[in-house]
Image 1 (spheres, one colour):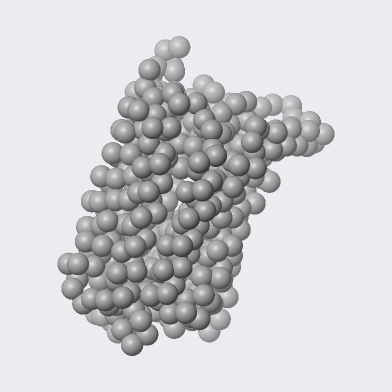
Image 2 (tube, rainbow, N blue to C red):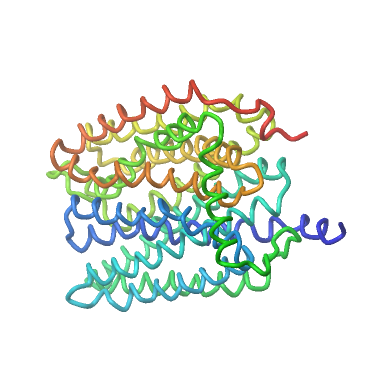
Length: 426
């Protein structure tokens, strides 16, 4: 009991850093790579197709999540994956100068993606094992905020760095080489910090004497039990469609900001894109995420679900406005991005809480991994074709299409059910 109390006193020491470490490789694979390839003259269609394929590890991670659940501890997997991610990030930097940089860097991004997906399984399981239900509701806003701050740090500060290096050296590949070495160094620091700081929850224990037969039985039981949940088809539909609009928007947002006005974009520099997401965006996102967690903890998920659904989807309209006006007003562009970031931070809170809610039970780590796997599938498939759609109809019509794509989420939310008290602090 004393050990448990001791561990509960430390969430602020490890939750922010753990979710920064969870967010950075994801944003590097999904967003920073998009900006990098855009600056290295890869087409929108190729960027969307190949970087969307990188969602695959998050889609299929439930198939190896039982290994994380049954072998070693969640803490062990977290530390190991952070070491591998740091090494692979250095691999991207080392292969950028080569003639076949696109193929080689994609290979290392695949390694980062698989390691990051495994890290997610362990980190999210560690989160649920280490906190009580009401603490999970309180810290879901904090974890979401720091996860998103990693997005801002990646597509903000790292992109600013790359942009400044582009301008000062005139060598775009060299600028991105240095940038990837910097993020690799950051992961070395995450690895060392968590090696000493992560707590050792009593519930995060190693299962011993597991035979192959028993392992396979446990795998099937944990995997199939998820699909025996009540109203599972409605649950899966909600997960797949909650971010249908965003899944397409997120792939084309950075190319839109970077593309010249004659191509329908806003013509921002690499550094300006970084500033937009790394300054105003981070403030708005932090407010949205923290307020979302506080609100959910006070009134519960059922009270806020519709408001949060509106918050995560309505801001897509700012891109329709930006594409229609192609404004050069940098302050106005930042305001629009701030609206989007605040809405995302607030609205994504409900989605995370719902994934936690449907994962409750004996195999919560694996069930949460399955749920997030379907979430990734909902991002992967629409994202793959988003670049092709944009090239066919242009940016303005594409963003209108994105707004239309949010409608299924509103329809399906009407049919989901959950405990009205879930998430409330007792």
